[in-house]
Length: 388
Ligand SMILES: Nc1ncnc2c1ncn2[C@@H]1O[C@H](COP(=O)(O)OP(=O)(O)OP(=O)(O)O)[C@@H](O)[C@H]1O
Image (cartoon, rainbow, N blue to C red):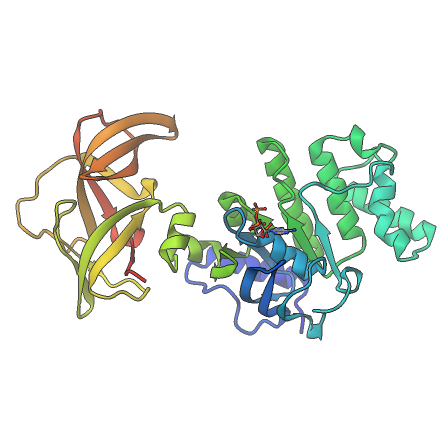
């Protein structure tokens, strides 16, 4: 049974508040199901077997670096590109080989793709006209959408006479006019300036929630994905690297790639040993020894890659440890020297060198270049990965 919009909103708010939520709610009926999807261009395989289930009313953000296949996935879902293998189902119906207009999906492009010679009202009503709807019906639906999207009074203007934010709203209204089951958004905000972007972002979420439309939103922007999505799908070179709630992918990245992509770009080598319920970090020339709880991701004793965010570092003036192995406090203390200090706003940013490595560390006070510092990173902020 499909969820009503209010129930979706409730499920969404529970998920957003629930730290331990694993993401895709058990008991939900999958609405859009993608199985083994492969697609590419003239011999180049771009999508390498995508499996994903989305339930009705869910907002999915598709995040990944340039060229990883986000638009290809969206275009294949919409029916504008043919898959080489795999299956796409909507509410159990196989739509893999159906034309774009037979799938109950609407795609909003980054470039808006509005008809330049048509007015705002004609652009919004375009899909309804194609579907043969009566003039009065079209006028009433167009008027409704104009009001919902703050386009009242602009109905006679041509796209060239609109701001970027207004054009994007017209593109969104045109997509929503046909009442799609699934709204596909291909970086619809990337041409907007930062302030308008925030406004349109909130409008899209509010509208999507009110209508209960299932949405897949492609973006480069990590923060945009975090604030808009129920779940984030991280793509890496045409394959899914992780699917999870914003909290999942931020706090429990499944791989070094996801950790780096989600901002944990500081990377240092450590050597660990698993023993019973704990994990021992060997002291080396970068850090003191430490005892940590075993994280949830699989690790083997030996060398690991340690990743953490600049904000996760507690920076203090260097204090030599008295014992050989302080451990037991659930944190690793690295030793470094400040190379550069700057103030990008909010906190002081430091580039700190540790032997031949260097990391970025934020602090509320500034440390001078040349100063010896300790960098304390708590276990929950330290992501460890064994070599593949
Ligand atoms: N029409 C095309 N013909 C050939 N190759 C293409 C075509 N469109 C995209 N590609 C290639 O397919 C790969 C995936 O492209 P795609 O546009 O899906 O990536 P993306 O993740 O959306 O990137 P971006 O974030 O830069 O828009 C890239 O290597 C790209 O060069």
